[in-house]
Image (cartoon, rainbow, N blue to C red; front, side, top):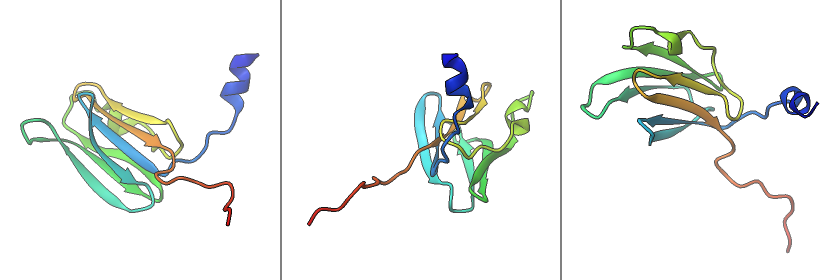
Amino acid sequence: LVFLVFWLRPKTGGSAVRITVDGKIYGTYALDKAQTISIKDKDGKVTNQLVIENETAHMQKADCPDQLCVHQQAISKKNQTIVCLPNKVVAEVTGNTRKDYDAVVQ
């Protein structure tokens, strides 16, 4: 029952996608700005290409043999991920990059 409650609750939309390569943060990019991010390994070789458009992110290209990350659906909701295991690349949607305030006191 507890599992169903968490599974059925709506996921909140994210505002940014954080890319990590080999466990280290590569960069954080806003989902509301259309852009293409070329992800490079430690030798400077481009291994993956992530595209952000229409407030979603998807892996457009990868040099890995299985191409599983390229075939994953686009992500836009908080905590959704795209993983490229051979290249050790993870793209994860994160929450708001700014603080939201409940009230303003004067």
